[in-house]
Length: 176
Image 1 (tube, rainbow, N blue to C red):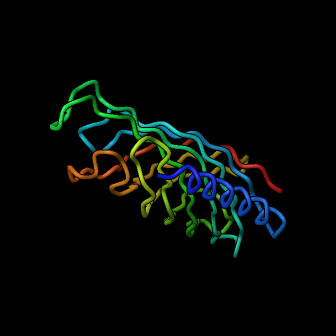
Image 2: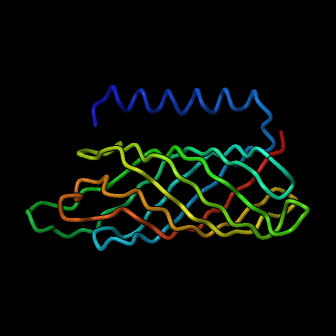
């Protein structure tokens, strides 16, 4: 990806978060993710994110998130020679989060879609989706299990590689 495209994507994410904060933001969450990649070329994935959550009702909210995700490659050569490269991207996504309990906490289901802006060598921008189930405590603690797929954005895309992961997210949300 060109340096100017990366800069534009980062700036767009920052402006989106800044402008969204001025609207009716209800909660700002900061989280860490640890995942198991679904591709045989990577050992594990780790990342961090920031999520704004706008409440449409007590049970339904609209999350807007960005962060950083890094896939750590296995120490093994791939078909065309050379080592498998790490893969990293900046996700920018939005979706719907639905709480099963009318109080707006407890068990929830969430679906997010957006873009994964590749920041590692030879990576590209791709469509990203992430269905999630989780539990949110009224204290602000949030634990979620998600499948996140960043498509064929890594350097191994020509081998038919999809960069997906099953990840555990631990976060804390602050009311605004």
